[in-house]
Image (tube, rainbow, N blue to C red):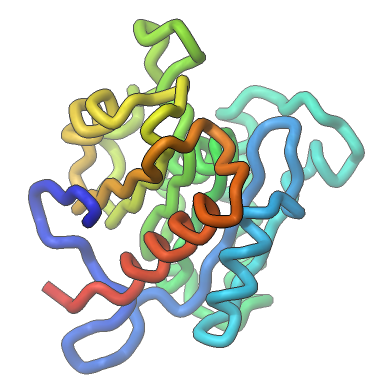
Length: 209
């Protein structure tokens, strides 16, 4: 079962039965694309329940593999979110955002900077570079007040389960941590990807608290 701390995770449904998350935006890791198998799998499972958009950042759309500074991409995303929500037909505060690794980090920085969102879905969050646990990418966590889901492999060199448990305590919103046993930074097997998809679906289905 996923780990949880502080408040009970906010749900995709309110007590009246109306979704508080009505659409999901997924973004890729650095050097990857929105065609990543995990993102495609999530969309395939969830698209019958809600609109799901796999979104390429501008640098990816231009054919570049190396991303700009994460803060610059976060500003880009913040500017794009109102139009994306409108295209998906949902209010921006009913749109959950997130993605893999760099993409999830960018989404979390956008929310910390004031972007409106229903929640964050952070897959393989790159808490620090491999082998460099002192170079944390969590300074903005204290400015995140929305519900968050983190799903990572237990062998991910970018963040151990214990590191995630410790550093996500700084997040003001309710946090759910899910882990994929034996997986690294990129879930390479069908079973590992299915676990990620299941964790996202479970988070969306949590009863209102």
